[in-house]
Structures are given as structure tokens and as C-alpha cells.
Length: 86
Image 1: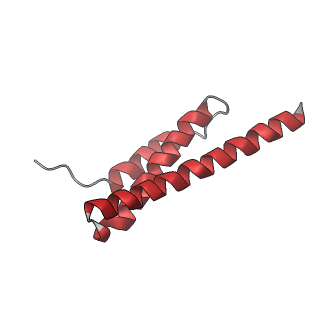
Image 2 (image 1 turned 60 degrees about the vertical axis):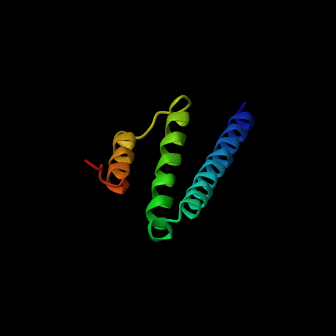
């Protein structure tokens, strides 16, 4: 019953934390490998937004998301992404 629900929520929270941490680590490693330490904070922030979007889509199957969450994450992604080259 309720214990199972709490356990599922705790597992989901732990998985979400691991997803965010892994996204940050991946972003830092990629930036170092590509030799872009000057843009490190932007890369880490963009990877964090990626992880948050992924978690939101996964959570959406179990719980309703706050209205406007996904558009807000998309807006953050656009603000962090480099301008497209012509």
C-alpha cells in the first residue's frame, strides 16, 4: 500500500539524482575532451537542462507535471544553446 508508494517515490528520486549527476559529469568530461574549458559553465548548465527534461518526460507517465514545465525547460535550452552558424 502506502509503503510501496513511498518506496517507489524514493527510488524515482534517487534515479533522478543519478541522472542529473551523470549528465553533469558527462558534460564536464565532454568539454574537457573537446578543449572548451571557457564554456564549461554553459555546457554543464545545458547538460543539466537535458537531464531535467529527461526526468520530466519519465515522471510524466506517473505524475502530472506542473503546467508550463516543459516549455520553460525548452526556453532554458534555447537560451543556453550557442547560436546556429549560417
